[in-house]
Length: 177
Image 1 (tube, rainbow, N blue to C red):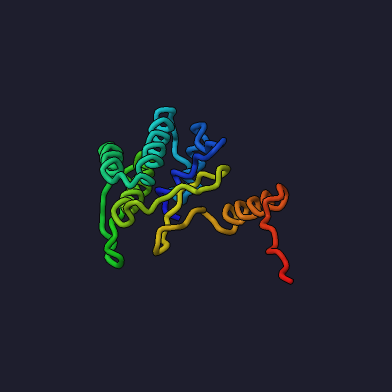
Image 2: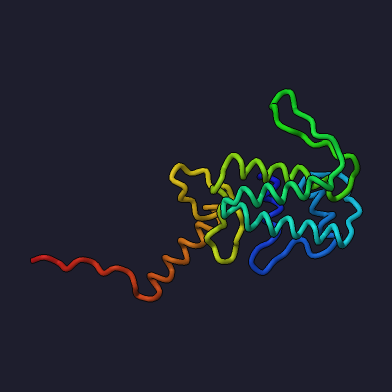
C-alpha cells in the first residue's frame, strides 16, 4: 500500500490510531519506516495528525495544490539527503536523523506521487463503517469500496438482506394462461 494512504488510513469512523506519542512511534515501525521507534513529542504527534488530516481532505478532492503545500511545509523542517535510485530513477530520501519529521518524508513523497500520477483517483470507501482511502485504478473510475472482499461484500449482503427482509423483493411476473 502507498505510505501516504497508510497514514491517511490511521483515521476512520469511530477510530484514530494516532492518539498518543507511543501510538505514533509504533506506527513508524509498523509502516516500515524504521526498525527502532523514534522519540516522539506531543508536538510531533500534533504535526503528524495535521499532515494526515490535510492529506485526507486534499487527496480525495484531487487538490494537488494543497498536497504540494502540505509537502512543502513538511519538507522544510526535515534534514537529510534526497538521492535518486539508479535502477528506478525514483527519488529516495535518506534521513539525517531518526526524528519523526525525517521519518515521515517517504510518506510525504508517496502522497506527492499519488497527487501527481493519479489526480482525482483517491477515493473514500463507500462503507459507512470504514472510510478508508484507496486508489481507484479502474478504467471507468467506478470503484466504490476499499476492498470488495470485505466492505463490498458486506454492503451487497446488507442490501440483499434489507430487500428480502422488508418484502421489497420484486414479485414474479403474473402467470399467463
